[in-house]
Length: 114
Length: 114
Image (tube, rainbow over all chains, first blue to last red; front, top):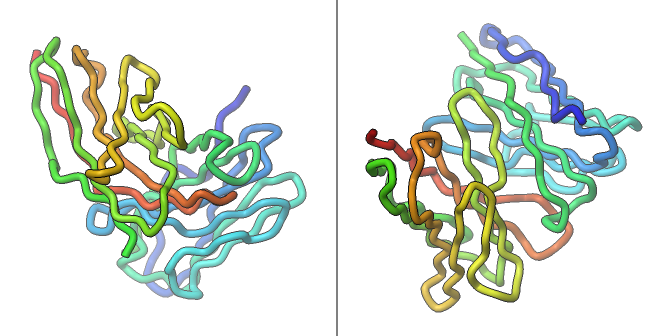
């Protein structure tokens, strides 16, 4: 069974641009979560989706948004990029929401903002 | 405020030696507790989790962790470290609801001496 797939693996953007990151969960998994990982702030929760609905949102500005499609694939978008948005963005999927279903992480998308 | 503290940024042990990684948490209610491992360029892999019951939990790769409510701690242990255990280890807490809004510690990087 294929794992969580994130595309692209690497991305370079300039300040002010917008970016869309994609996540394909493990087949059959219906819940997708996103995390931002930076050296300074560590791992921080961005969003959690289940059945195309955002269930939770972390403490990030409105420039960060996401969505989930009917096939459980998810995208996150960051508009008006800032240098501080440079990070590894990790997507994770689980069969169902909540900790009873193990969370499986992808290898991440490394975003560099110049 | 909810938080997770991993007081050791780096730990170096010799191969074959025992290992203990510390984790303390501050949380309003009894949380779910997790340990994840991250190898360079990879996502996070779940080592073990604690929900309730026996306070000593066994995980993959020979790891175990002990939940101590009185000390708000969830330390990770391994009796004999292998060179392949070199990685970064993250402790995380999550709410006891159907949510994967995890709060991660800042991580402990494990170096293994041959």
